[in-house]
Amino acid sequence: MKRLAVVAAFGAILASAAFADAPPSHYDITPLTKADVDLYLSVMRPASAYLANLKGEDKAAVDYMHSNHGNPKMPDPPKVPNFGNRAPTASEMAAMQKAMDGYSKNIQKPQAYMARATALASYDEEIARQHHIERQYDAVKDPIESAMASIDGIGGSCGGDDCAPSHPTAAQQALWKKEDAVGKANVAFLRPYAPEIERLKKPFHNVMFGH
Image 1 (cartoon, rainbow, N blue to C red):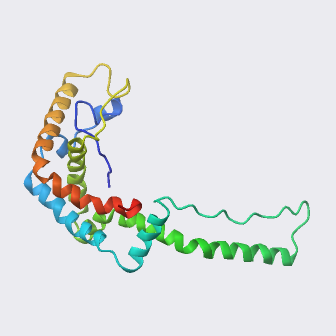
Image 2: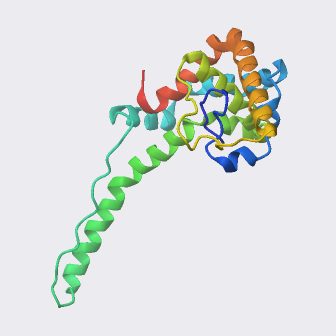
Image 3: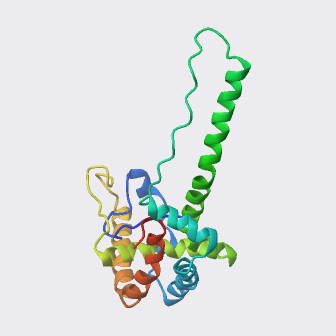
């Protein structure tokens, strides 16, 4: 699923001339509705509640990430001795295999924790899959989170010479104007929902980094 968090401003979604020629999605040119937000919340509410009350191995995985500040460092694998031009002896081969087996055992649990924490950080996607609404959820999540980024004042903006074609057509300019209007409408529409959405999103951030 897309993870865009940009302001739907003039040209903001255009990274190159190729993007300018791509057909707009439904939500590029159509403002969000209450039904869209209701669908988003129907996924985020149970997902956020689950993350806020983790137990068992899920809690252990998150605790592990917190203890490593969200960025665990795996130990280096055992070094292969330099045998020069000779082949290792049977005992040397056995020692290398034992060292590798120990290394694999030591990293097994941390790797499992990291994989599970990564999955939990996008647990909303799992809820959407369970309800067979992945495509619908993915479609509404992007414009909602883009608008939320603007509300929070952290959205990006278009900048630089490669942001859009230097000589846009009239059709492109008309599309950008429409997208800009839709982006502003989405921001205004979502403001009443913003406090709940912010609250629901917090446990997702806490998966990796804690409070």
